[in-house]
Length: 532
Image 1 (cartoon, rainbow, N blue to C red):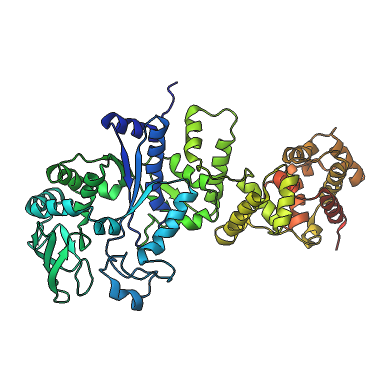
Image 2: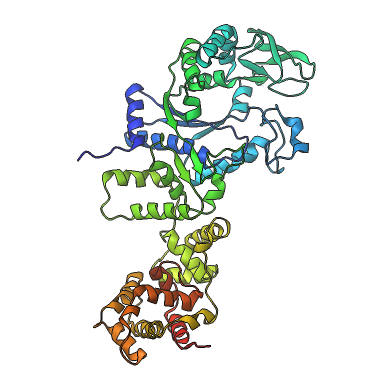
């Protein structure tokens, strides 16, 4: 049987076959909350970067924040009265929404950079406002202005849309209204490195420097970056890859204007948020990466991307499906005989230099609720369950779980331990009461700590007439038990009813090993005796 090769290794091998030295680039405009959908781009780039390093190459990896782009509109999360005046201005030049960051762009970019660090993604971070102000784009601006007509023809050929007579590949920042999308270029001086303009919006006319006085339009700026930095591979969304899209025009501009080869395209599909559709900062359909890192281990989010080929869309739901995602990752991580392909997925999912608790997330969901969120009790239960870990690591996972329960968990995942025998135990049958008494005897007689498998085994042994617990049940019942009532389902119902006052709950093994044995023995005996 042919072993499957991970998609990151396939892409890395293709890029390495084409180029002696590779540079992977990615970038996002920080105009709003940078969400899980955006994270797919940088994680895809990181996977290819890691694959190249694993194969002995020393590639470069850049994250270029497009923070010199204009604020396009007043988004739903902004106040109209505060930001309407800033529409059209570069987002690096307008105020931070919370007042704690250098700019509007940094308000969204700073937490994203912190999230990348938490995920073990460490590219060289560049900001386009700084690059323009340092003069990095001057050569590309001059080339684009001199070949304005050729670029216009390329755009018309590729997109099928006519370019207006006043269109320019360079957008000046008007010195009057400070907008970057309203001025019109009237000429340029290559020797002085200046661009002349007039602004219909405010009536200002003047000159700006090619060093920071404006920026290239997106369809020209993208291939200019490929030229300036020597980009050889880049992931981007399927919108840019569509026929007539910015990658198609970028190919021609790259070759015909900037005389360089375009990078290997790594096209990825959208991440869909539940039933709400593709995530988008501007539409408000978004779960930020920072929010997710507050509730789940970073490995689980990396796993979400690593297990799925880029061209396949991903459906993401922070509720119960997120819990299942973490469980899927943990099962694969702890698998005794994984295939080479499975080992590769786990390796690429690991967050470099980020230590995480090995307590299963689902088990911590149970432990947290049994302990009522008390960190000292959680630590004690974790140790009783066999997890000898640093308390801070345990507490960190507990805080993740607590926030998940508060923010995203569906109602059926939540429970609370009753302080006294629930009134619902009045509905227990005599057989269920006999089981609780017999189960209490088994727990009390145990010479060592019982694990989850021991708990499950004891319950299922009720079906075996010759078993110890079956014999004890007969004694407590005072005679033979109705065969139709010897059903483990009924006995699990008795357990949950005695502790939660409801017929169902979390996985019984993990659930019961979270309690002190003496407490369980007392509660089961009280529930067996309870009659209103």
